[in-house]
Image 1 (cartoon, rainbow, N blue to C red):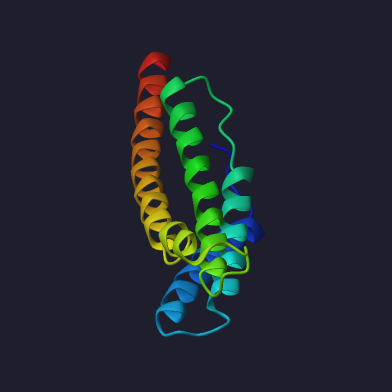
Image 2: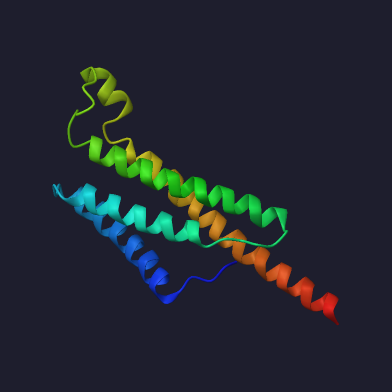
Length: 138
């Protein structure tokens, strides 16, 4: 995996922190919370997209694609969080409540589970890949 620079690592951590702060503030009905979460999700997703895998392990490539899907889901959750503040899509009230209102929580949960799974599995696969390379070098 390509290592991030110090600035990129800072932006990744800042994005994660902003997502947590935005989610917590949204629960306390703060008007600005959805925008903080959206900014954090953009930082977080952008830095993860910059962290590329140049190897040939198909498992890691598949896991990276799942991780990128979770990044997109974080941004969809941000959009739904902003949309939950009011029906600015102009939808019928019943359609709005059924498909938009507070459904950001489900999308955020799915994205977080995918993120946890892929980060754990990628770390294990990279360790196995490194171990097999060292074993073949001897």
